[in-house]
Image (cartoon, rainbow, N blue to C red; front, side, top):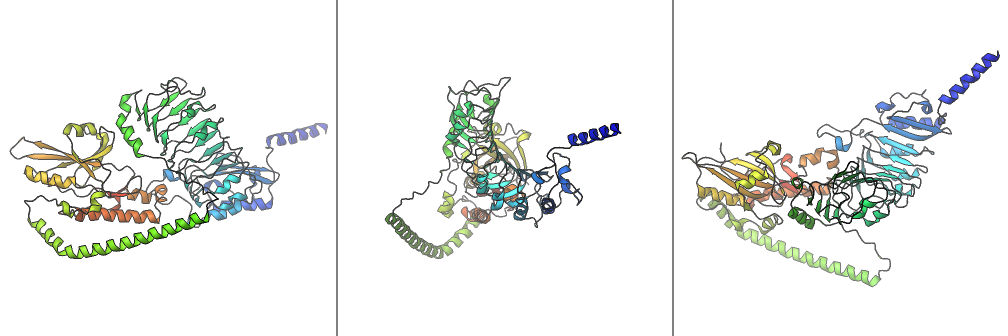
Length: 600
């Protein structure tokens, strides 16, 4: 009998040792809440095993699911699904988020009822829509992770009230606008907002941070000097933005810094030769910026304990084959400026000043309205008077082939001025074309256009171009060819992928002269209108005003092709694949017909 008692006691001790301390039986209220979360998330695969018999506090922990209980309440919810993030959605693959019935507001109405929740992690579940302001109902939240969803809108300012927050991870979503002021969170250690559309101002962050990740956003201000006070910072990743201005040397000497990634920005200037580096610094990437001069000795070369990447700047140290010429960085640095922050309104503005400003605005508005009325009336009168004359000119230009096809009087002033900002049109040599395309290397081949082959190229000044190769008919008079070149030189407009120059190669192998024309176009790297309409991340940028501006811009490009030169260029392959958008979402028509007698 004594032996049985001892055995039973040992069995009980073993059971209590195996079971985690954090488990316990949930209240019926919190159990019902978990089933509501399962339903609102549309029964993801990781939650499909839940039944009314499930004891949530005894569920085994895994990378995909973790529920921690204490005192009969849920302390942590971690759910990781298998849906794509905006960055990984394949165009044309269909919607990747939850259905149209999903409600972010309803989900957070349920989640905020977990009164003791410390950790909330909802990753790759297809959540969409903005985070609701009711997120401030979390009173004890310490870690929030909503990575790889389709959450849009601004980051709620209510997050700045989470005094116990230690980790904020909202990476790979569709958040836009400015980041709330997080300087008042004394316990915050980790911030990861990478892979969003945030900007343009660099956020205000807590000095207690250990890791800051802001990569792949739209920040385009200067790096703030306040970062020099971040003595606990070990990791800083602000790559793939548009940050401008000088690169602060203090970043390399922060007391705890280990990882520093500043690549693919527009940082300019030279680093001081006296720049010091922290002993802990093991990784530095400053590639693809506009830096000049020599690297300081502490980051000038790789060592066994330190990795330094500095390619595609204008540095005079390192491999010169992987650096731009000095003129490239100088030109690009002059073209970019930091975003100016709005100044705070001063409380003591005097009433008389306000009334004076209002009066001035009203007077200016009245003057502008009167001026516009006069201009519109005059332009209508001029149009009516010149309508018949234009018709006659159009008919004559079609019949009279000996005359050059260019009539600069027919190019409206607005159209001529629309191409301002492009370099002067020029004639290239064959050697320059070959150098730009690396002897037409197959790796630079971009495809077959409607009229010829396309190659990507780089000019001596570092600018990226597209070279189109056109085969001409064998029988072609030199004088007539020059007239066509004159037409080509006029194809420059804000809403066209404009022509920068050409090169003519003539072959004299037989009596019939054959020629090839290489046409050099500006390169637009931001993708087509189709890309922006099918890509989840890019589609979020195209609000109603942007779509209207793109439509109007494309129409102006077509108008220029029809009426900007004589004779007009018609029969263009106008579709959304051939409407490209630059960094400012300005539409540019590509793949339009070039007025040359091509070989058939």
